Length: 253
Ligand code: ADP
Ligand code: MG
Image 1 (cartoon, protein in one colour):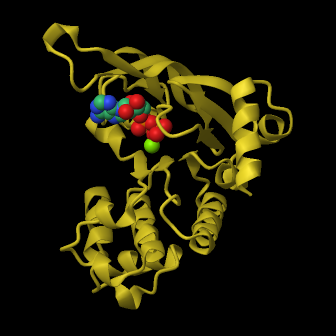
Image 2 (cartoon, rainbow, N blue to C red; image 1 turned 90 degrees about the vertical axis):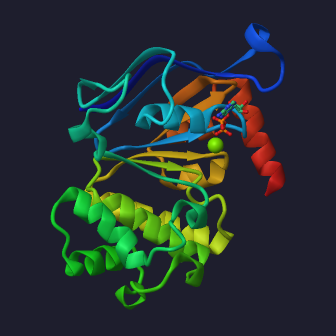
């Protein structure tokens, strides 16, 4: 079943600088088609500036598509998500510390999501923290008292509190040390199995995406230049850009 469908979507920005009507437009997303089937993890890769975050933000309604159509479970969400649907898509961002309110205790951060969903209960907070591998005894701590990896686990718990059907992870492990990256990737893989989560997993890092994605879409200059089963994209890339991305990733190794 197609859960998310993105059809010919364009998102543009006014370029900074320049004057008045003459300001150039940046076509950050330039006619993207992408579908995500329920239960699968789609990896979105591409170098920095290729439009991945803008596409993610357009999907969840943080940016408005200039053209095209986005549907979620058959409902048109192009011009915004209806109130009752919005909780079904949650995002996890790159920098866990800045995405968590520094003044709040982590238990309250998670509880906030639960309250939005249905009446909160403290045992639900504990259960969620446990589910993401954070000791519930830490519920009274604030983000600054936790490691980056723990903060990202809390951000994931907050997202899961709303029982989303689609989780969009935008560079969710990119700010973390390699060993912590591996732990968070393992956590996401476990959660996917346990909860049957559908994921759009975005990263500039091909190696990271390979660990999680069933299918991979490669983005370049606002377009998806190639997509297919992960194995196929990595083993037999059809687009020159994918081949050069893979080659430069190998060099870095
Ligand atoms: P990625 O996530 O792949 O690194 P982004 O979606 O962040 O790419 O950026 C795509 C392009 O859109 C870049 O050229 C970036 O500078 C531009 N861009 C992103 N957000 C904005 C914005 N709010 N205003 C103007 N330009 C933006
Ligand atoms: Mg980005």
